[in-house]
Image (cartoon, rainbow, N blue to C red; front, top):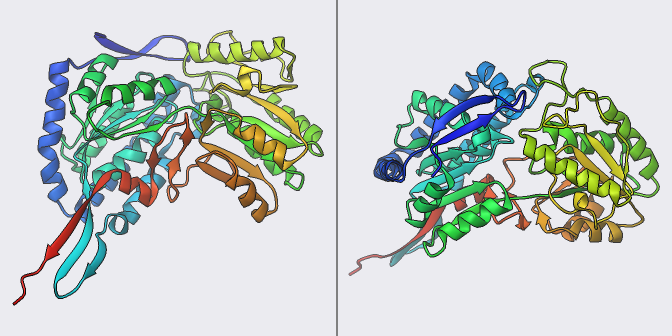
Length: 460
């Protein structure tokens, strides 16, 4: 069993933070406290739970001056981008706003003889396993609505962003959320699996790798505990012949490179109509050549290191394999590229779907661009993937985007935008991206269970 978790800073490879993991015994005690506290929390009025959660959100925002450099140290995002509090607050705020309607009873009918309705009741203990790439926003997607709905929450954050869960718990406790209702834990994989197999949780939300999602489902097998997953991605962009070229290039390349490409809904492959292809590539290359790769604590840095050397190693391997198979690289090696976590962003052309860079998740600052002649060709290529999270379509024709979108195997269809999570829409995927459903009214439905009431009145 692992005794200690270490966050290795991508800035210089030093150990930035360490935390001891819980034993199986102490972890079970944490889950027991969460279960014991949940009923009293659920019994509080919805308005009170919502107010306390939003006070916790505000308390996290008050920490932002500390959070921003801390994130740079832990996962390499440049400080110039200012952290995640805008999206963090937006998502929690939307879920707070819709809570009353989303959690309202479903009235089926009442007459002199019967009253029938369906309640949404909390599962109980919700276990949230959050990723490192957007550590605050991905966590709040589930933490806020789960608490508002009346669940207790246990948060296990990624080792790469070891301090995030602590900060969130501290903020929420200071705002008045009871300590046993929202707990942060440090667990190794074996203890996590043991707790899941023992039925310690009533709902599991996991965001991470395909392998991690499979491990969660294996651990939960036979427990009947619902497991919500958001896993890998290989999100495509398709630029049609009537697209606004400048807007398409700016948005898709930003979607591919922002956060060093470490975004679940980042753009990893682009298909451009042959009439715009050469101009698109030229503009894309100019944008990427203008990036400054460097220390994320430097305000001038626009592209920081990848979160870990092993992640950069995988991206380099995909690029090298593609070049060996005939791809063309357009970006010369940056001076700051150290062969480790600091990685030159790359645009590849002459790529095919036989290359891993167009097939496997890269999760780094590289994108392949292919020329297409028709919607049919683009649709076939976009669907030629084991993943399905988002797809970004660029056209002036809404009806055409809807028609193409209907034929794409994906969770979200964007038109003339990309790489954005709208909290009013369900965040979901298909195929090996998983079967989660977060945010929106559907997020509340997944974080509660239906309970039916069929009440026969006494009549004389």
